[in-house]
Amino acid sequence: MNVTYYTVRNFVLGYGSSESNSPSKWLKAPGAKILQILRYRLEPQEISDRTFAHRLCRLIPAQCPFERKIEFFGHILLSIPPLCKLNPLYDDLMALRFRALCYLAEEWGEDISQYC
Image 1 (cartoon, rainbow, N blue to C red):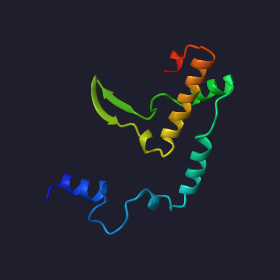
Image 2: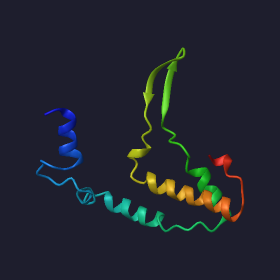
Image 3: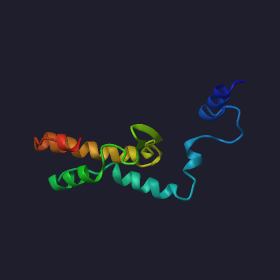
Image 4: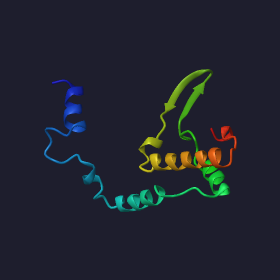
C-alpha cells in the first residue's frame, strides 16, 4: 500500500479508522461555539451603508497578507505559504468583502478597482 492511497483512504475519505472524521467531531471543541456564533453573525450581515462598505473593503485584504518570499541577491531563500486558508472564518470574511464590493459597484456605480 502506498502513502497516497493510505492518506486518501484513511484521512480524506474516513475509511479504515475507528474514530469519526466528520465535521461534527470538530464542532464539539471548546472554541467551536465562538466560531459558530461569528459565522452566524457574518452570514446574514447586509450591506446597506456606503461608508460601512468602504470600511469593510479597506479592512479585509484582497490577498493573504502573510504570504512572503524571502530573497537574497535575487534567489528565493524561503517561501512562506499563505496561511489564511487555515483561518476558519476566511471564506465568510471573503464573502462579506465581496458583498460590500458588489454593493458599491451596483448601487452606487463606484469604481472598485482600488480595492482589488
